[in-house]
Length: 105
Figure 1 (cartoon, one colour):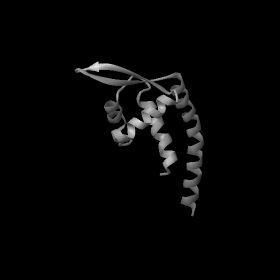
Figure 2 (cartoon, helix red, strand yellow):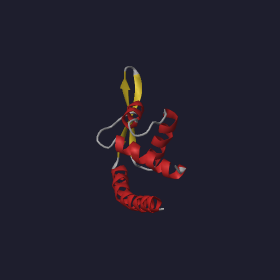
Figure 3 (tube, rainbow, N blue to C red):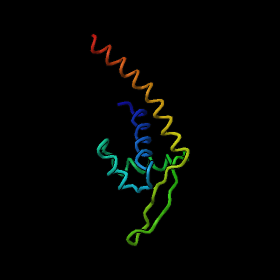
Figure 4 (tube, rainbow, N blue to C red):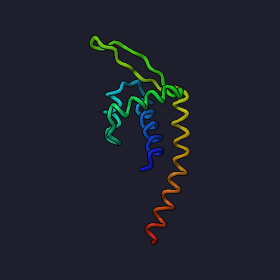
């Protein structure tokens, strides 16, 4: 898969994982594992990029004597998810066309 496409999908996947409740890194990795396996070294740059883009905020909370960063989706992040859902309709139309043409060949 093209690296740029995958990068965009990873961002959306992470936003979707925190859409309904705040979460932390390890839990995000567990939540998206049924769809895609990523490492911490992949996740944390994504989280920083999304924070810089205003798609999420970070709040540190003490947990078992350590600080744990919780990530919260912002309105900008929710708008990005909504835009993705609309754009995905176009992607699926292209996919359907390509598959139809390949099957016809």
